[in-house]
Length: 341
Image 1: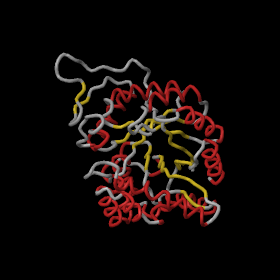
Image 2: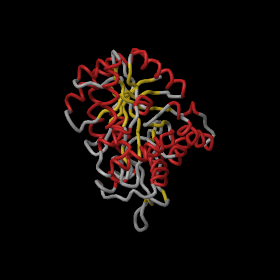
Image 3: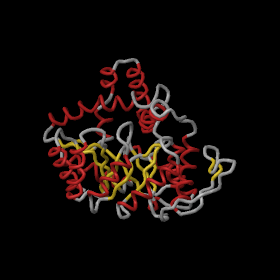
Image 4: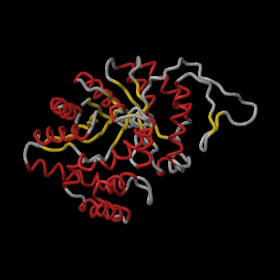
């Protein structure tokens, strides 16, 4: 498997930069830069392009609705040039809370918006005059405008990764993307993701080998059972937040993903308690199995075995989120994990 991580530049930017530079020295293959509701990804990626030499860089993710498709293409072409061809474009629909609550843009029809965004970006990458008439986008608008092409050099080889969780968007990923940025992944429940992904691949006449399956999880090492128990317990509230606090009161793609992988009843109850304000009660419902199933937490032998399970399940690139209170601790965790892969 290849190795990757994801960082954000919303806080403590100097430490984050140092982490990426040291991760490159350790041999990490890819660094994705998240945006969420914090620092924008393209600015940080441009800076990293100037400070790194080998590591591949990606937007993980640029959210639909925060920029026009052509603006996304412009940023991607610029970053690919600045990085010497080391850039990959990661796109995702995000959710209604961020898209509507923060950006004031309708979240409606994410499947249509994603398909059309990718089509428009591909036109821009190819150096074509951009002309598109769809359900979400029309370029150019009716009137005096005429189709234009970007003045930058074409680069149709920039890979496009989609961060998707729902079945329809997973199918679209298989159909049109070069890679899949997944999360909330349980190898034992992988069919919940791979069945729609493979359906999309088949629709496009492709196979699993034609797409980079990139999955992420926290990695943390425990030296004994007591440490492991503490680690698992401390992660339950974080998982409860994903199940109950992410998204809106009616739309939570993380909750849906866990539900499809066998935890529908507990996921629903966690969400109900979290929404009612009972955060501790929600966390108490999260089981050890749920934490261990979706992370790389354990003794060194446990982590080694889980990495083997992930590889056998079909993961091409493992995205590591190393635990640690300090930069040195996180790098030590990352180094230990890399040695096991």
